[in-house]
Length: 112
Length: 114
Image (cartoon, rainbow over all chains, first blue to last red; front, side):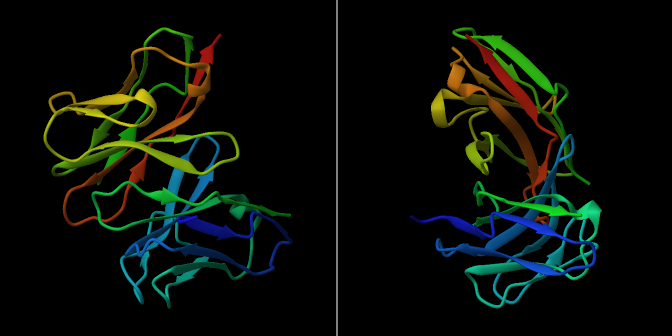
């Protein structure tokens, strides 16, 4: 089925560990985004990309890095995880600015 | 800067009654406005959008929203609520040019009471 696929769906990390979240879309979308969702705070933009090879910082980029080496993939990295990064992470994509986003099903990350 | 306010954290409506979920926004320029719905343990799903044109836009599952420029509002409505409409609803805004980023509100939990 066409859409946005996120892996993994769940992960528990120890403080200081690193990991990479993968987002893959098969809709030929130019724009891709990483958001985090925390209770009472809605969705906050971490990083985004407007095309292959490009990345830009969002509202809460500290502690995260991203890469968009291929158009269909957008990777989110945590180099040294902290408990404050416990959250649900959503990837989204769209073709142009006026499109609605297509969201992945999310990754629930717990840092202990 | 752009921002969205959803003034109600929780809205309860009896099944069969009309529902409204409120949203106000602030942008420097013309807004693109969106509504999304999130069911438990799921990602967000796109419901509807306003880009330009008719102020009343219709979307999925019988929802509609009215763009009001003078009140900077984009309230979500449905004439007759279903129990299956119970979910978390997010309003989002971006400016038409110069900013690719969508800003989301904090969400409104809608509960339809049988």
